[in-house]
Length: 365
Image: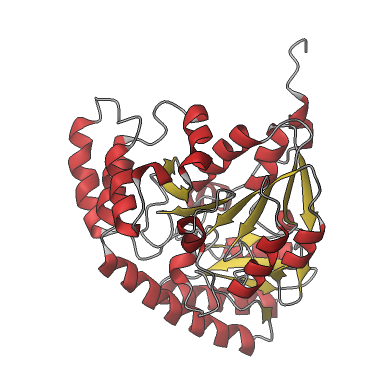
């Protein structure tokens, strides 16, 4: 082939999302399938967002507001920020792409954990930068001390997923404070807080407080995909100093957030009743699954999210595949450098019961 892709693509392993329900039905002929692989909200969509989306469908013949003014303003007012301190994207991963485009040159370095969100790796490589990986600390936690030791004069971005995907663990405020003392001013800390609404630990750091302090080398990313049940429309948002966000506005696509998503975000950000319901039910389901996993003799990581990292052993991928025959989709973690683990999303009570029954059958077999 005479066309030659850019050399950064050579090191990219494409992101593989959780297996879709339709694919399992087609491949295995299973009619009744539940998906506990992608950390989606099993309780549906924010009711207020649903009403807003239906109304927005009437005007989808018109291009959306390219600046996403109204949804950014709604987010800014809700959290007490100025408009120019808020960015939105087609999911939080879109903002990670924009950050990579805005801040990475050939040969720059990005630091992340070996067991964290793989989108960091893909966009780093696409910009022909170098990804530097650090191992987990005991308890399946991010090792900020190891990350600090990995910093060089080529470090431009450090990605801290908090709570971390796929382990569900958090870094504490004290750990983050120590890390920030070692982070140079010309390195950008990306605090990816996609699951932060589900955390109830008093040790969880105040990421937004760092932005309010005026730190220019911190950006906090969040999403409507999880607690608000809007994964299908793709809407993420971020907070940073206006000077830090300015380069992102230069590289973002012209209409990165569609009009239906913008309407949904404006409504969902005020739907605290649905958010509280989701968090409460998720916590109940998590405790039930903890008990069932202990009865099965399975080790797991203490989670602050809507998923649990479960140690199965060398047969993890085989267990995952056999669960598919029961119509249960969970996530293998080989791509996260955790080949003996499965990541299991917390579902409704009925879904959790079905998962446990299928898991028992598979493990007995």
